Image (spheres, rainbow, N blue to C red):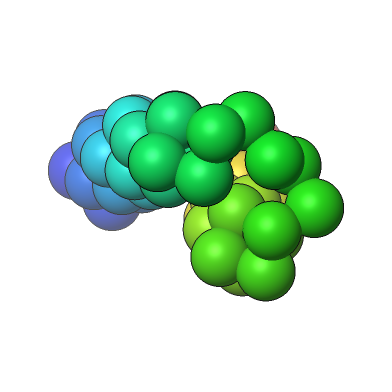
Length: 57
């Protein structure tokens, strides 16, 4: 359970970081830094979902 809470915290931190970068880049969603941050949060969400699936089986 602790691992899941850590994952949620990481996702929230990455989300806040993504929003910040989007603002810094004047809402240009094609900016390489925005795309990198987006990919990072996507990986974290996929890892969370994978872990959740394993723990509920």
